[in-house]
Structures are given as structure tokens and as C-alpha cells.
Image 1 (tube, one colour):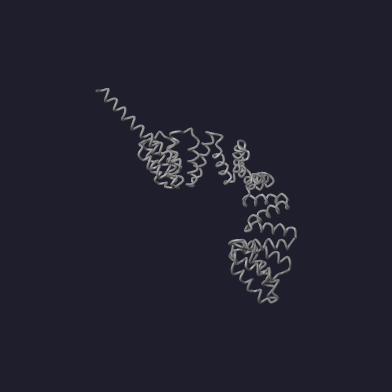
Image 2 (cartoon, rainbow, N blue to C red):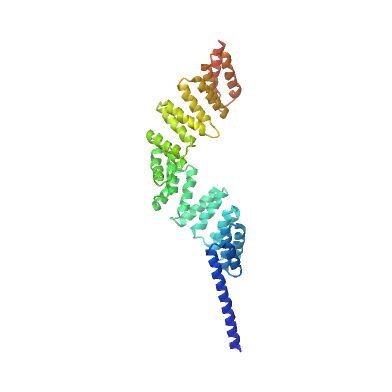
Length: 375
């Protein structure tokens, strides 16, 4: 009798195990086929850690992050010895911008596995989102100490010091990373910007050139490369880069402006006027710089009326600028023959700026012009 009961029990167990295996196989095949809703339903009939974990992953694929978080929270409480579950929970909380909770989860993960650099790196990123930069830097530092090949932490440390203008340390971390990955764009960019922001344009240049060689040709990068060429007296190269930028991005007002400035330096005023005008047409929303540049070209050409109107437009764009309005006053004095038309500009300057901190730079001349009108 006992043998018979054992036999039937074995058969029942085997049947259930076989059915569960079939359900698992079906659920896995549905998941692989990206039929996530049916896969969830199939996994729901299987009572195991693996099935619940797959349900969480399926919810992520469907974009239902809150249900995925609910599943992962249950699993992390029920199976606290499973670090991958906890890591996924921390990542999903980070992804849904629940940074405080994400930081708590990564802290738990570090307690489980203190020698793993990855949760420290991810905790550092979470602290970064919480604007706790010093705590973030500390975690990146610990992650890099645990694994000197952890490039993500190396990059974060390089960027941390770059933002704080601690260029020597930024260089140190960038060089450590480049020793492992010589063509890594983010590390090359740290080197380039550390030299550029320290006004070492000759040293910055090869790193920007390397990035261009690697097909990184974003406008902000090319603008800095062109500026390096300008600062190292390679003006023709700078012109070529700026022209490349405007060919690819005809709305780039900064590149047009720099082309205008380069042609003005060459005394090619018609070309300078063209590029300043393009900058003016494309610039949004503050056009004062471009208007002043165009005004200066017309002034050098002796077209004082056009220059005056452009300076007045520039002042409308930047009414806080004493310097622009001083140019308005100066040109009004040269352009108008009738002193009655000049006086309002001079008196308006006094009214607008007499109490400003640096008004004394201009006020002596303004008062001198007013005295001349009285004579």
C-alpha cells in the first residue's frame, strides 16, 4: 500500500513538474517573441522567482514601469539574496526619476556586495541627479579605486573636475582612461575642453581634431576647433571650419558671426557685412551682437545713417548696454547737423545710465558733447 501511494505521489509530482515546465517553455517563447502581455499571463501561473522576474521584465518592455517596480519590490523583499533583482529595482527607480528611493536601493546593494564597483557608480549618478555632487564624486572615486578599468567612473570624475576648473585633475583621469581606450570620445572631449577652458588652444587643438577624425562633428565641437585655429593664427583653417558649419547648419548664427569677424580682420568689408547680416537674420532672440557688428561695418564704410539705425536697433535688443547707447550718441553727433536732434540722445544717456556703477567711463565724454552743443 505504501509503495502504491508513493508511486501515485511520484506520478502526481512528475505531472505537475512536467506541466510547469511546459508552462515555462510557453511563457519563455512568448517573451522571446515579444508577445509580452500573453507572456505575463503565462508566467502568472508559475510560482517561482524566475517567473516573477520575467513578469517584471515584461512590464518594463510594455512601458508599465510602476507594475514592474511593484514586482521587483516584492522580489527584493522575498529574495534579498538576489543582487540582480535589487540592481534592476534601483535602475528602474532611477529611470522613473525616483532618485531618493533609488539611492536607498543602491545603498542596500553596496551593503550586500561592497567590492562591486557598479552599484557605487550608479549611486554616484543618482547623487548627481539629487545635486549632491560631493557625495557623487565620492562614490565614483570608490568605484574607480575598486576597479581601475571602470571607464564610466573615470569619465564622471574627469567631468567633475572639469566643471570645477580643476584642470590638472581632469587631465589625470582623462589620461588614465585614454590609456585603456585611446579613441574614447568622452575622454578625448575632457582633454580637449580642459586645455580649451584653460586657454591652452595649441594643446586643445589635436584632441578636437581627433574627435572630428572619429566623425564627431557637432556644432559646439567644431566651433571650439575653429576658435583654436583662430587663437593659433591659422585663420584660413578657422574660415574653412566655420564655412563647414554653416553649410551643414545654415541657421548657425555664431558661425556666421565669427566668419564676419574674420573677414573684418582681413579688411574684406563686403564679405564681413554679408556674414554679419546672415548672423543677424539667423540669430534668436538677442540680436544685439550681430547688429553692433553690422553697424561697425557701415560705420567703417562711412555709411553713418545706416550705422546709426543699426546701433539703435541693437540698443532695443540690449537696453542695459551703456556701450551700445554711447555709440548711438556718438553717431548721432556725427550724422545730424542740427544740434537739436543730437541733444535728446545725450540727455537720455544721462537719464538712463548716470547712476550706473561704471557710468563714469562714458559720462565725461557725454558731458563734453553737451558743452560743445552749448557753445
